[in-house]
Image (tube, rainbow, N blue to C red; front, side, top):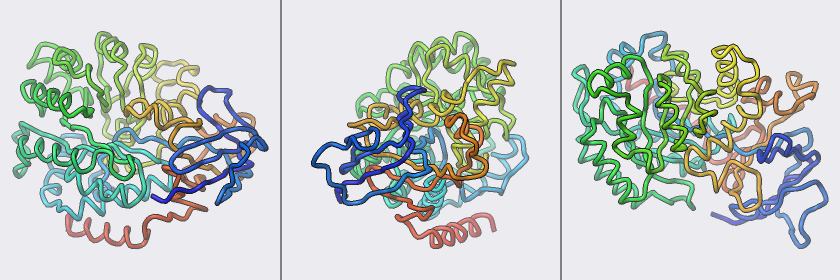
Length: 442
């Protein structure tokens, strides 16, 4: 990566360190991968000579969004299986198509996902899908920061079509991928283990995964308590909830990213809070599949670290973290009948600094602060729907749109400027993804 010095000037800077840490007419100095200065205009350290200056007039500068849960290449199935119950969606539409996935499908699908995420201000994402190496290639090419895993299934359900790769094969592949990709692309790409869920990865297999994760010093991402059917099946088989059983197995003693966490009892919430578990809240996917509403307000109160995810575009159908912020806040207000819960700054934190913490990256990204990686987005505020400006944070959460994201910087590199993505050929990516999808579903 080429090292360069960038200066963003004249922007309204939201550092995300606190709700009042907003710098009017601010500046951000970047050297290489890192932020080296944040302050009011005119406080730039002596001797810092920028090679490129970005004018942030009428723009808000804030940390890039963090998408804590997605299945990136499933973007190829966007619009293919809508308005169906989860069981029918999976068994009759998604699984039959996924049998035909090829390596290049994963690459071009993930690249299309990366393109969409860049254009909506996401700079970091966590992915669980197939062919981890192809997802890594795409993230490296696009310039995003990624936490990648290959979804593991030990015991596929009877309705599963085809034969998934064996658990031993995926574990060996993950070991190989960790050697090749963990810390690749100047540290942007890291690897996690990805047991799909407790109901598809029973306790014996989960123990093995937890042990391997500890030996390799890798985190784990998993689907957890997503649906009522899943929750009741686990309780019926084991006499306890998934959270309680996984806690007994030692899952929460290592870095874990738990997606969904919709159906929890009070003890589950206490465990997730006391263990400071990372939780990926996916409000729009949960709504669309009628999975339910996660008790986010209670989880936050208990001390859990809650970030936001989109889930895959086959069940959302977009990858827009601004929409997820708004949905997350509004859902908690209506389900608790309390308009004060999840206020705007907390929702914005879930999309930035708390999302980074949920992924185990809280010491690297999520704040605009010297020493942090330079993952910065500029949001154009000169839009009718963002006037007047009584409350900037409220405008960003409740009124902004993904198309307002003007500039995206990841790891100190400008990957989008003036709404033009600089790392990939957008037309090529869309055309190649279209061809992949047509072959899969034709």
